[in-house]
Length: 264
Image (tube, rainbow, N blue to C red):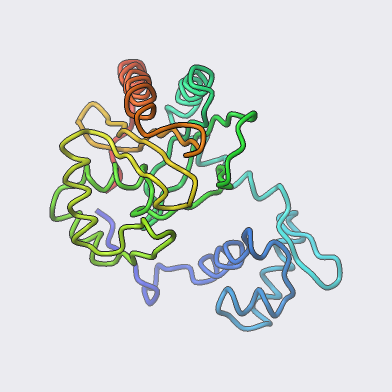
């Protein structure tokens, strides 16, 4: 097995890491930035940031108007190569679309990405007004979302404790679980009941419910969730109507789709 690289390893390509840092410095709060701003956010010198930005511009991944830099839609190709490599992605999208049409609510499938969850499949109910801005680029906190809690609950104790050790429990609303004791108690409930119900823990006005997606080895590799608005849909309806539909959809998916092995 390959050894784990560190930044000081002779096999570590520092320039690639810096280039990725430049791309990741852009986001919803900073879609257009000056050279100085990019250098600060990417934690590098202005000359280094300039070389990476000009290279990205030349390759078509960035645009420069003379003062500001911004990423172009071509950067979506980078994520698409990952999504298209997932053997279950297209079939999973079909099931997400079907559940969305059945419940007329937004349905999303997400995977763990370090201490966040990343959405990889999304079926949006366009006629519903949701306060949360979520798309295939979204990175949401693992401790404050139904996706994250389901996937954390599926971990064995040793892996979970290692994950919690490096987890910063930021408060997003007054209902967010911000102590590890409270989070452990919630995960125990999730593990017992087989689903996670989250009510306004990440965003006021939003409630969601998620169940795990497991492979043939019984490993949780993703989570599927329904998100809705608290003013429209009661807790009882989520648990009594949405949860059975969600579970039935996941059961059909797991019979129809061969999911990959979990990433260690």
